[in-house]
Length: 193
Image 1 (spheres, rainbow, N blue to C red):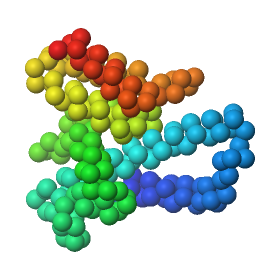
Image 2: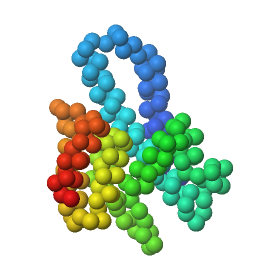
Image 3: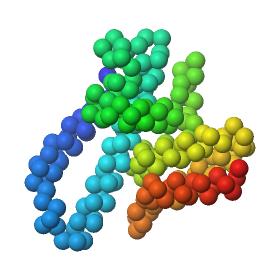
Image 4: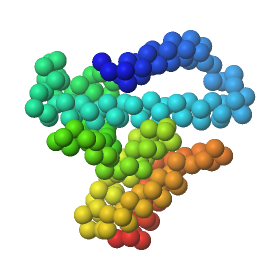
């Protein structure tokens, strides 16, 4: 395993160790209103960051299952979705969404081994920073994928950047709910399509 994978696995193990007892001892009803809202937002921030890693790994699962050497098949999985579902305890439809999103956001590799970048760089960067959740990210990716073949790529990229900035919120304003992201994406697309 390379140092990137080793470091992340070590940090994940540390996080599990650090959080297991406090999560087990959590008594939400005993929190004040301010504590409750603050903790809910902080846990959401953590969940988005963890979802970013899970999404990237799910996307890579698709690459590994469809490559010249099916490493997941060699481990006994029927396909990428099954591997993601089993390893994350997700339903098959949810594993399929995660795999599809990860595939859309992960950087690719050229035949020479150079990184090609993400098809949705602003969504990918926002997810990796923990600012955008997977549901909102998939809404944005799906919507822009539908129009990208008929709209100037520079305009699509600019619109993606704008909707991501709006969706991810700020320190003072929480990220938009996925339903509101869907509404805002529809407005953006109606304006540029």
